[in-house]
Length: 265
Image 1 (cartoon, rainbow, N blue to C red):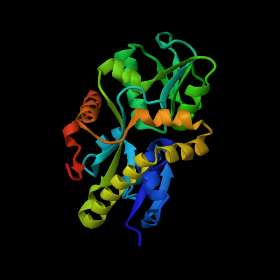
Image 2: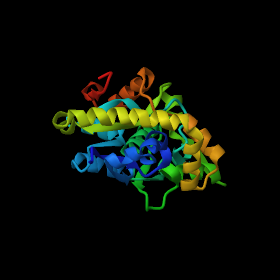
Image 3: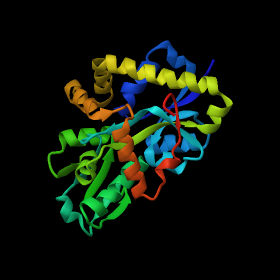
Image 4: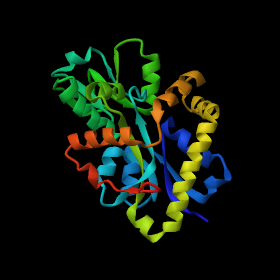
């Protein structure tokens, strides 16, 4: 029996949440699809998934169709490690130059735009990731590897830059549930909500195992990855929600339109 169609990030950043499900018999209750944030955003929007981690900007775009699981997020209170601007020159020298932007994350791209305009106060041309540029927006495992191995250039962590600019925490991703799925299959929706919370509790209790799995996937050291996972925050709280609301408000969204599903919703 399949309870739901579940999305899973193609990167290691959600391993602490979903490893408990995918490595136990509970995983057989779901059909899984791995993808980048942009791919998962599209699959959930097309009703080809029922629940998935998605970009926070996509959640705002689909506020009328999706519900936010109130217990979980992908956030940080400063440095994030896996969303970076890697530049050949200091950021202040990027004025009038080009930045290659990955299409894999709507939130990272929008955050970069906000930081360029309001924090660094420079105007740069954003071009597709396959174009030559003086700087590159990187996310996920590629960002982690670049931050660890870059022998030249300048690395700017966007989570830290947001903290320096706003003084607030940041939410890159949210677990969202299709509203229609919750209405048509409430028992399955609640079961999934509690299973994801339990899976995160398992991941938290097995932090070393999570780092070992991540090291196998990326080639980075377990020590590096343990440090990385300590930077990430997976439980939504008032500080993270406040940062999310300020970010979405800066893009013209009404944060109040995001409705939650769960014990706090």
